[in-house]
Image 1 (cartoon, rainbow, N blue to C red):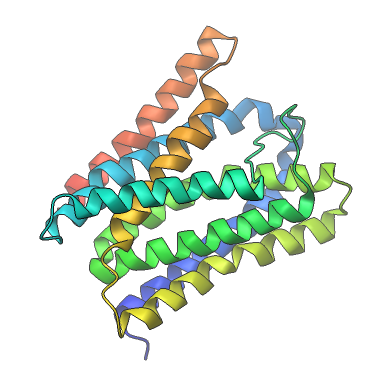
Image 2 (image 1 turned 180 degrees about the vertical axis):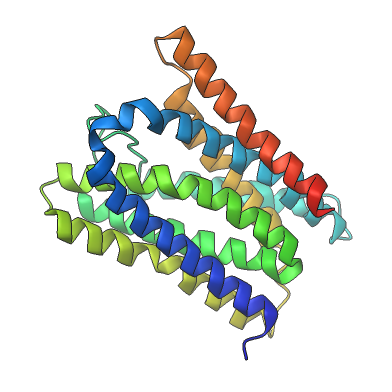
Length: 248
């Protein structure tokens, strides 16, 4: 029988891979409707990620560290690492299939997503090692981000000339690195203290939410659309706040 923390880590990995598969497959059914609901979903996921970092991960890291500075150093490291991934791997979340944003090569998209999922899996595993409730909250926040990401990635792969079957298979394979990262962290935790992964994950979440997702939704020409996106963002934050109150 698997230890409880490992079971949760494996379960979170399976959930994220399932969401990746569902999100990729949904692209074919919803491609003509993406503009209607995708940006509100992106705004919601930004709020969930930022709320998860502020209400769950950072408070937990402060409570488990003897130094008040140490957690914020790792928040900065987590934030900076994801900036480096985007800069040096040219990885970008093109949220819309017909977006005019700069398209990276399809293989770099998969490489970037694989690295992103590996680091995400490591970060989420660290939260489960500290507290299962914290891990659940972090997984929910990450899951909110996964669906719009996979929809966008499928659009980029198809735009790059890939067949539907090939894009679906390889996009799913890149999601499996999430579970790999979780298992690596659990194995390392048997010999090392990995408490730094909590604020590190918070930095990841803050970067993705604030620097990657929010710019997608905060410059819409329609005032009505801007209010809609802001409302979706606030709902994401409130969901994480309510979850924090409920879990306590």
